[in-house]
Image (tube, rainbow, N blue to C red):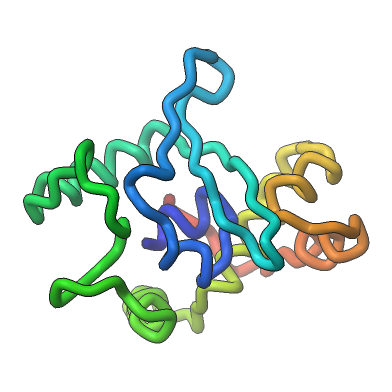
Length: 153
């Protein structure tokens, strides 16, 4: 959950809506794996998914016998039903507690876009990944850089 949130910058509401059929494997070497994200305000978008995160999803799928390739259901679920927003938020908060920081899903979104900006990614590209209509909204995300947090993902 943390890897997907940080690695893609998607929203809490978007991760709980992801389904296995949303994975896209392209013939392009540039972005061979991506996710179709149903965004806020019906702003669907395609976001890259790293090979490492894809491999983690497949391992998760195999560990819990989910039948990934044929299963069209949600990525993240427990007790035979999709995770709620609260369940995902609790998983993230618990991970933060284990390393001594206050962590929530939206912070991972901020960190993801801030990291991309620090790596020299153009603001317009980050805006597209974020699903923002306005660059000023994206700037609010991309300038937030807590100095004490380093992401091991």
